[in-house]
Length: 619
Ligand SMILES: Nc1ncnc2c1ncn2[C@@H]1O[C@H](COP(=O)(O)OP(=O)(O)OP(=O)(O)O)[C@@H](O)[C@H]1O
Figure (tube, rainbow, N blue to C red):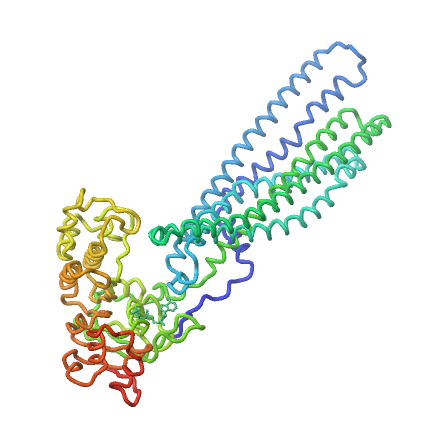
């Protein structure tokens, strides 16, 4: 079965599809908001009508002072009630439309954030090793919020402004068509300029967000490596880097504000021109007797209000343009396909693995530009046995471990667990069967107990048991709050050896039948190494173990040793058997004793025992 090892091309208009899928999902609340928006529009259109009726019915043609009849008073009271009624409808409609839109906005932020974060968690290391973390964090936080605002504010305002405009035009057309056309004369001009400006603003918003992502990545990387910065005294260098990017971001931000302000001013000028024209033409129409004084009040009131929705449309469409640029960034993440089968189509055996591991003719490269990291690797690791992988740096040892843990799938050949191709098994099951301990255990902020129990709901007694077996309990009990001691980010507050023993306890708790130990004692002093080794001894007991090590001494304790050179296995056998002959392992051992591993030519290793350059394979 062939699998993709690179992300597939994103579909067309992914942002639009994402948007419509969310509109569909929240159609109930959005339909409620649409209905209240219609009510709000009607209330806004009706607002000047009580005044018009009062002027036409009670004021016009009555001279300077006049008496109000009983009928006039009733009409006046009716109009006052109408004003209150219109205000009540306006208030209720505003409340509900704001509430429904805000609620959908919040819900959409939640949905998008969880979906994007979940997707990011499931994307493989191939994806994550090419994407800066800070930029991804910016997408899950800032970009997602901006899309929520798009629903909560922008779309609602755009829809209600458009409705008010259409309503006003219809009513003005009914009152006096020439006046309506004059009032709306500038609208097409405004829409055309708006489209032009939106395009520019959206381009600028894209650049801005990309720059913000870069700044976030730089800051994340720098702050997570603050020790290195302090050690090298490079604070100023790091500040300068962020400052340069931030200045570029500022420049685009200022440009964008200028474009927006220019557009706002243009709308104001066009609005004033139209109001002046409507006023002049309106008074002439009243004088001609074509419309009443009350009609003129309505038309002038509308014309005054006309430019608010137009301005709102302009303003909100620039926000929409920005939000769209951010939506594209989220859609881009969601459009990357999983490079590894995520287990939904994989088989989940209803038992724990026995622990036999096989690599059959495995080749793998991290990316097309790089040389293959593994070529034709075939290995058989019987259940419960210990295999040591040795070889010079870059030979491919960690890559073998990563393929066994199924961080990646091989480009060619297969990795098998109990004889079953790992690609046909659910990813979850494979990960449960293979425990991994790296050179440096990464701990999270939180208590020691949480770090050991990580991802499980193990009780206190179990956590203590595994901590004891890992040789960690003595130092944990000496901490101020024992297992409840809080650790800083990355496990600050513990030594390398202590972190490693917590890592051993963490793996012990999960009790996997297969272990990949990737240089678990490298970098530790002799005393810490002895303590970690004691913990490791209880960990490897009864489990299939693949030990990746630079230490020939450690490798000698394994059942079998595989020597790797340039992504191939050049030698395989029991350590004592290899040491007794003219082997690459023996060459490595003596080079290590002379502290001359780097001086060892790979071809010497390859030629040492494989004169015909055949790749060694174990039975
Ligand atoms: N994430 C990665 N992306 C691209 N290339 C990689 C990646 N990881 C490793 N490589 C390359 O793959 C090759 C094998 O690396 P690998 O880490 O498996 O070697 P190793 O034998 O474990 O080395 P070491 O002993 O130094 O850990 C090397 O050439 C390395 O540069």
